[in-house]
Length: 97
Image 1 (cartoon, rainbow, N blue to C red):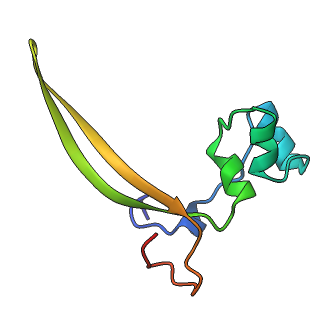
Image 2 (cartoon, one colour):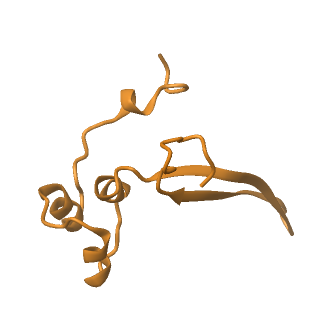
């Protein structure tokens, strides 16, 4: 099966931390985002958040095309809005954020 339509469980890969913070999270030395923010460190790997907040879910709210006229022609970009939050209390993952 190609990458389209695959469920997330089927395509998960083992995380190999690349940063010092990532290695500390993987080893269990850092257990919350609060610890990271209190020390002023930056989260440079998405897997850090996935490890610390496994129930966090996201939803793409909207995607739009933004066009700008320049001397050389049109410049086209895409803008996107994404919401992040905990799952619904009822366990309904289809609810709005």
